[in-house]
Length: 183
Image (tube, rainbow, N blue to C red):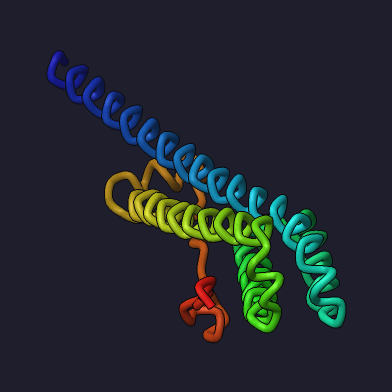
């Protein structure tokens, strides 16, 4: 009888420990996503300043500015990681266009305001890249825990669901971004 009670207590403690580990990992995934969200919000906040700075020089690039405005609106209504990743990747492409076109405007490149915005944007892009990596690492740990024995049993009992990785689906977007501010 005592052996049965000890075994039962050990099993209950093991189930509680596995459940708590799954909850902890799920919360880390949410935290990692919020870090991406914060950095993308920061990038979205920088874009209007960048647009205002370059507008006077690039009046014929209004289609790029319209695309950026459209993407900012789409971001607010996107509900899945995949949708937000796609919007983020499209925004990166639009920003690459602005940076490439800015090469044709020496006065713009010499502007202190433009240079500061470029530095801020580059810093933010680096933070976004780090946040994506951290998010994907965290999701991978969580999803692995959901699939490994014996935690997969606890996960199915308590209906834990796997999370999506932040992936780049468009092959063109996987290319390295080359922004050269020195010219």
